[in-house]
Image (cartoon, rainbow, N blue to C red; front, side, top):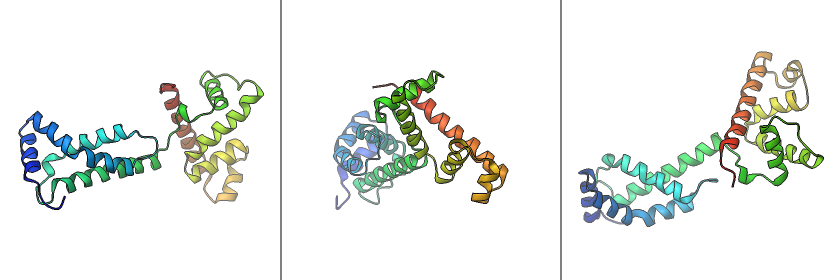
Length: 195
């Protein structure tokens, strides 16, 4: 990786001209590098194959940006690192829970919620609590605080205002948005295949 490889530079030129064989050659030559970067920076909840595919999609989408000033492998490494970082930021911004993360009791509790039923037997109550805890953990600290105080502790907006110093309107808006985030996460889980 110390110098510019004329073979890779030629492959890049041919790919830009629409040569599919050159695209395959390019993928084969940089695949080990991309896989190594992806595996060492793999975000939680993402398969290495999916992230590798995403790196290659970005690579080909941005191929016109490669100017040939640095070795192609360096440019590929930068694209791969940026893609991994973007995925990590995305997960921090929008954490999610999947069916496979849930225990048996949590699964039963979520299925009951999805079917608009009351939580069944007492064993599922602990599952419902664990599920609620997992969902709450996906919220930011301020949203979590509002939901905890208003919905779980049944405090009034005035009581929350006394603790936080936020306006009553702000508290109501934050609670509404936090509930909507939780609802969307549950709906997303309901849509995903159960394995």
